[in-house]
Image (cartoon, rainbow, N blue to C red):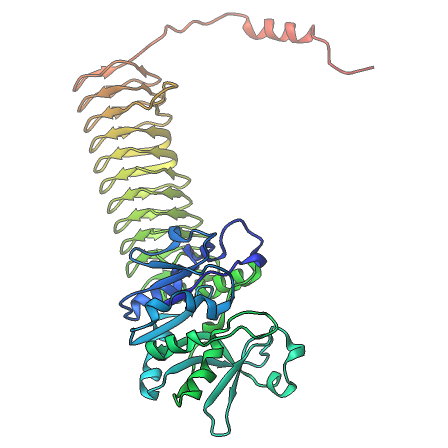
Length: 462
C-alpha cells in the first residue's frame, strides 16, 4: 500500500511537517499506515518530500519513497512506480486522511476484487462537494473520469453540480497502474499530475474502472489547516472513547475525558471527569483514574486509585493509592499496595510493597523497602550540584516527620529516624537516627522586635 505524504502543508503554518502533527497522540501519517497494516498489507510505503523527515512518525518496518518535486498526486505515485510494477494490488491512501480505517480499506479491497476492475475509487455523496474532485460516470453508470475542481472557473457547470466525489483513496491492479502512470501528463491549469487522470487511460485500454461508496463519511476527512486538524482530532477522540466504552470501560463524563489512540484500558476500569490519558498509558481492571488526573506513558495495575494527580513514564503496581495531588516522575516504580499520598513527588525511585509515602514529601533517586513509612516532610537531598546520588531505605523503616536524607546514604531494615533529623551517615538496622540541636529560648524577643519595628521609617513618600 502507498501512503501519499509528500505535500508541503503550507496552510498548517507550522515548522512541523503536516504529516507529523498528532491526532489523539499519534502522528497523523501513522493512522493510514497502521490502517493499512491492520487490513493485511504485506508492505507499506510512504511517499515523502526530500525536504521533510517523517521517520519519527512512522511505525517500524515502513519504508519511504521520495517524490523529487511537488508535482501532484500522480507525481507521487510515479515516484513509487518500481513498487507498483509487478504488484498484484496497490491501494493508495492520502497521508492526511487519518480516519481511513482498516475496515474501510478492507471494504475497498473486497469491492475491487468483486468488480474485477483495474481501478476502484472510493467515493462519497456530499450535499456540498466544494472543491473536491467530481466522479463523472458514463451513460451506463460506469466511472468515466475524475474532474479536479481546484479551478472551478475552468469546470463545466454540469460537472460542478455532481455530488459524488473522490476521496483520493484507490485500489489498482499493479501492472495496469504502472502502464498508465508512464503515459500520464500534466496538461491542466495546475500543471500537476493527477492520479485520477489514470482512469480514462485505463478505460481506453478496455479495462474496467469501478467505484465503491464508503460506508463512513470520515474517509474524506482530510487535514490541511489547524482547523481541519481539530475536527479530525475531535472525531477520532469520539471513536476512541466509544470503543473503550463498548469494551467495558466506564467513562463518567466522555465530554471531559481525553484518551490517546494507543492507550490500553482493561474492562471495569473507571475514568473520572477531567482526565487525560496520553501516549502508551495502560490502566488495569477495577482501577479508577481521576477526577482531573493526567497520565503520560504511565502503567497502572489492577485496583489502583489515582485522583487529582500527574503521572509520567512510571509503573504503579496492583492495589496502590496515588494522590490526591501527587506527581510521579519518570523512572518511578511502586510495588503492590504502596502509597504515594497528598502532595508527594517521586522521581526515579522504587517504592517497595506496602510502603507508604503518605504526604508532603519528595523522594528522588531512592529505594524504599517493603513496609516502610515516610513521615510528612521527608526529603531526599539527591543532587550535590554535579551528580544525582541515591538514598536507600530498608524494609519496615519508620521515618520521622521532616527528615532530610543527604545522599548518598542508607537506612537499614527496621530502623527509625527522629523528627527533624538530617541524616548524613548510614543508619544501621534497627537503630534510631537523630540529629538534635539544643533548643534555646530568648527572653523578651517579641518586645524587642516590636520596638525595633516602631523605630523604622514607614516608607511613604511625601
